[in-house]
Structure formats: structure tokens, C-alpha cells
Image 1 (cartoon, one colour):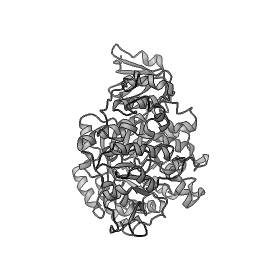
Image 2 (tube, one colour):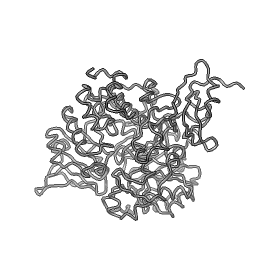
Image 3 (cartoon, one colour):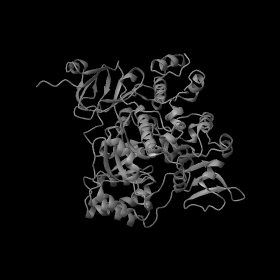
Image 4 (cartoon, one colour):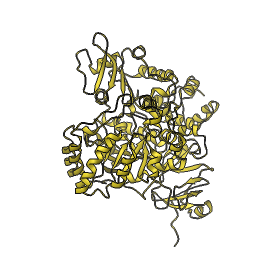
Length: 622
């Protein structure tokens, strides 16, 4: 039978397929959004017809698109354009310079928000700013700095904006620190309940609907730049369904999603969780949607009494005695309706109690065929891993230890940290296990930080947590971010590999993941990101192929216009070197993406001017 000529061929490449029957190739053909041929150049090029587009990859590595098993993308998208990202910034001095510049252009009554994705240990100074430093930079503009889920800093204007005073009562499980006179200092602590941090963030201004649409597109664009083509959304606090899903639904309806998204529903009602899930199982159907936007079950919050948080600065919390009864009620509703679930659980003590419930429910309502799983599981025991395997469940790990490893070691010692979480042991036992970020607040959304953590065993601050026996080889780490994730969204065989019949999601990273130095993995970006054979991000030699133009970030004072996302798209050193030449300061809408392309290509500073000029940046004083 003669094959219809494909829509697209990519050739002269080093293709890592993750297909064990065909592990390496040099060319792929794509039609109808799927791979139709994967093999040698001479085989695949023979399929080309007059209308077949051909891309020469010039010997570059090709990988399956990365899929994040735990990303708060819906919530993150609604807020991305309002947030100054310190993800990847290497010094507090540079971070504070970014903050000062953003304060200067942020109009009242807006805030400047740095909402997670970083740790003080990534800074050369190994500390956070002081309240006095924040007040000096921003005497009149509210500033909120969220550090992981352990604390937040508010300047004086921020305290006035949220209304915290001497008379404000202490929140349950949290602390508003006070001076000798009882006045709030601006430091908020989770002890260990992060409710005070959630509640304070919720007091800030929100973007109008159209701006949230724009913001979500920019967040997806940033993820595409880093090689992410899919994610499982884990819901989130103050993320109500269906109200807060209207933006992502609009983008799905208008075919503007550039991330394949499976979403879980997260209850917002302490003591009313069962009611939420009873209502949702009547109005929503598991797996409703399509390959771009589909329902994935319940969680990560099933009942608030089972939420053990992840603040290693605080002692491990004991779950309330009513946990089992409340969890039993919800899990029975889910099992009866054949909804899978995910459950946040940091500590083995929580996991073992939850497993008691799952095993009891399984006696009455078999869980076989439900792809349920635990999230995080940093201190899980071998016994609990075996119990999960026996029930047919899985474990979704995230790289929170890359950001909090120093705190864990401080509390529990380096020996306890050597297998926290025990990823290598999970894989040895044959359990379903995959990787993600838990971004945007407790860690960065950058997948390469997670891959570097899995391979090197190091935190972003440089602390070696894991001995080599607990680290993964690069192929195994990559599978954790690709084919392994598909079980968690019930999409096995649909994506995750470069294989005939699978969805044509792939990336061309700016360096060879398999041969670059371990120290270079974390700095990887994508030169070409494709979803269903469609280019959603292109940089460097592939910038002209980009089919995903995004309007300038809204509002016009958005930090995205000036700094973009991870590491500000161009680090502060490069910004200083070129600031006097480019009047747009690396962030005038589409030009910001062009600047990102130059940085991701690692061009020398001497070439930046001509490169950006060639891409159409008219702001250079040429």
C-alpha cells in the first residue's frame, strides 16, 4: 500500500524515541498530529510529497515532549502576568534590582508579587531580603514575597493593603509575627498550615478576565520555551470549579491551548468535601474532553484533615483523628463513580493511614483499574510502597527537595535525606512512578531543574542530598517526565514516546541532554517545541517556524514584559550589559520572546544586537 505523503518531516537528527523496539532514529514523519514514520533519513525522506514541509535539524537531539505530573497551571496562568519571578536568579542583589525596577512601573493600587518558585539557598547571599530592605525599595507600593510554603514577607505598604494590624487575630496553624508593641512586622509564618499564606495572597488585586486569558497564554508560552508539552493540573487552594476554569475552557474551545492538560478537581470546603465530590460526580464525567483538555479525577485535596503540608522547617504534623472517617466517605464516592484520585501526602505516617482507608474501601468496591496515586511521598517507607503496588496505585514525585533539602537535612540529618523521596527504590519495586514540579509556588515550573535533581541528587543551592545509588541515569529520568506520566492521566500508548501512532509532541533542546555536563542540564531550554506536529515555540535557527504569536503581556506594567519567567529569560548580567543599547529593555511584547530566543541560544553578547535585529526587534539603537 502506498502511504499518503506526510504533512511534515524532520530529518538529520538524533532522535531519542523511548520506544524500546526502535530506540534511536534520525528522521520522523508527521500527519494528522501523529507520528506516521520513525526511522532513518533515507527511509523517511522517501515518503515526502510536493506539499510535505521539511525541517533540517542539523544533527540536533530530539526528545519526546515533557509532561509535568503535578503543575498548578490553571491557577498559575490566571496570575502569571502579575508575578515577578525570581526562579533561577542567582543573587539576592539581582533579585532586589528586579524588584526595584518593577516597583517603579507598578501603578497603585497594584502590588508587586514574587510568588514562589525560588529558595533563599539559590542566592549567593543565602538569605531572603529583610523587611527594611523591602521598605527601602518600595515605601508606597505593596510588596509580597512568598517563600515556598513556609513564609511570606510584606512591606509596610503591603501590611496596610491587607489590613493586618495589632488587633488582627492569629490564624489557625499560622503566625503573624509582631514587634514588642504587638504590631505586625510583615513576616507571616506557616506553622505548618499554609492557610495564612493562601489567604494573604487572595487579598491582592486580580486581573480582569481578558487579561487572565492573555496571562494564561504567556504562561503556556513560557512552559513551551522550556520544552513542556503536557501537564496534569492538581487544582489548588482558592481555585474554584467551574468559576476559575472559565479562562482555560475558553482557550480550549478556541483551540489556543499549547499545553495538553488533564485536570483534577480539588475540594475547597473543609468539612464539606464529600458534598463537593457528590455534586461534581453528578455534573462532570471522568475523561470528558479531548487530547488537549480533559478531566482526570479528584484531588490533590480530598479532605482537609489529611493535608500534612510540606514545611520542613516545622515538625511533622499529626493528622486529626477524624481523618480516616472523612477520607473513607470521599473515597467511596469516587470509587463508586470510577473516578481516580490523587492525594497530597508528604510523610509516611499520613500515607500509611490513608492506605488503611483505601484497603478498607477496596474490600467493598474494588479499586482495580482506577489510576489513583499519592503525590510527593518524600518519607514513604518500603512497606507503604508495597501496599500501594498491591492496590494498583502509583506515586507522583516532585522536586520539592531541590528547594527544601537544606531544611530537611537541618531537621532530620543527612542520613535521612539520602532517599527522600526514595525514587530509585520505587522504580526497583516496579511501581507506577513519574515526575513533576508542584509549581508555581513551592518549586519552579522549570522541568530541567527536576531532571537535574533526579540525575545529580543536588539541590538548587548545590547541596548533594543523594548518593549515586539513589540517583537516576538520564534515560530513566527522561522516562519519568514522558512515558511514565501517561499512566497518571490514563493516556498510556497515546503520548510520551516518539513512536508511530502516538501524538506528535517533541522538543529540540538547545543542548544534548545525554552528552552535556551534569552541571548544564538545569540550564536547558527548547529551540523547537511541537505539539501534534504544530510548532508552538521556536528560537534561534527555528524562530521563523514559530506558529504561536502571543500578544504583549497585559497589563502594560506586567513583569513579564520586563523579565519574562525563569531567570528573567536573560540573566541580570546580560541585562546590564545591553541595557544601554536596547530601549525596550528586553521586554516589549513579542520582542521579549526574541530576546529569550537569543539567550536560550547562548549567543555571545557581541552577537546579541545583530541577532535581535534580524528577528525584527526595532528597539535597538542601530
